[in-house]
Image: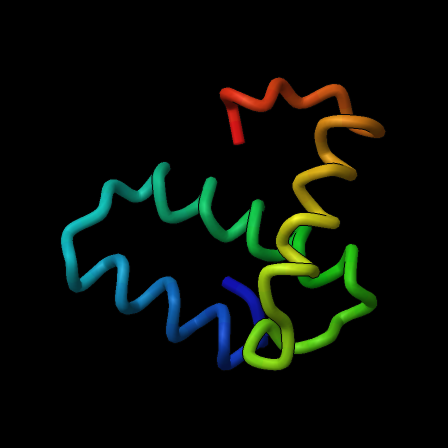
Length: 69
């Protein structure tokens, strides 16, 4: 697991809600990618603009299909 209290909280919350282990791992990968894309800015300080920028980055630069996002 990560040293990040934020990611630990997310992981623990999903575990309590009985998400599958692989689902939790996958969500954490996407969340970490989002955070690193925005130079480790805390998600609480970001909004729709940052989400849209990250999704556009995935589609344009990482060749992720829009339906996979």
